[in-house]
Length: 162
Image (cartoon, helix red, strand yellow):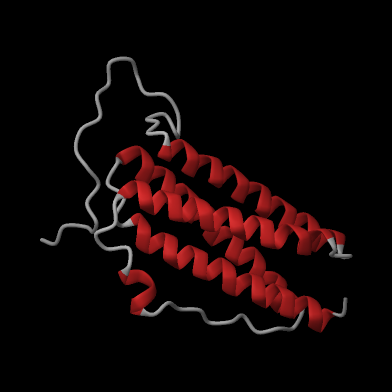
C-alpha cells in the first residue's frame, strides 16, 4: 500500500470515527443516569484520543485531515428518544464499526499503523461492553460504590446558566 493509499484509508477512518463521535456526543446529552453518563464521558474521551492518533497518522503521511460535521437531521432524531434506545443505537453502531474496520486493519502491512488500529479497535470493543452493561442497568459500570451509598438525581443536558 502506497503512502497516498494509506493516507486515504486513514482519512476514511477519520471521517467514520468522527461521525461516530459526533452522534455519540449528541446522544450522550440525553443520558441522565450518573453511571451511564460518566461511562459515556469516558468513551467520548477515548474517542477524542483515537481521532488524534488518526489525524497524526494522516499528517505524517502528508495527507489532509478531513473536516467532518453532522447536519441537524442526523442529530434531531435523538431528542425525545428513551435511554435504552439511545444506548442500543450506540452499541449497534459500535459493533458495526468494529466489524467493518477489523478486516481492513488485518490487511495493513505497516506494523506500527496496524498495531495502533488494533489497540483502537480493542478499546472500542471494551466500550461496547460498557454499553452492554448500561443496557443491563448496572450501577457499577465504572466501579463499585461505598457500601450504603445511594445515588440520587440526574445529569443535566447542559450546564446551568447564571
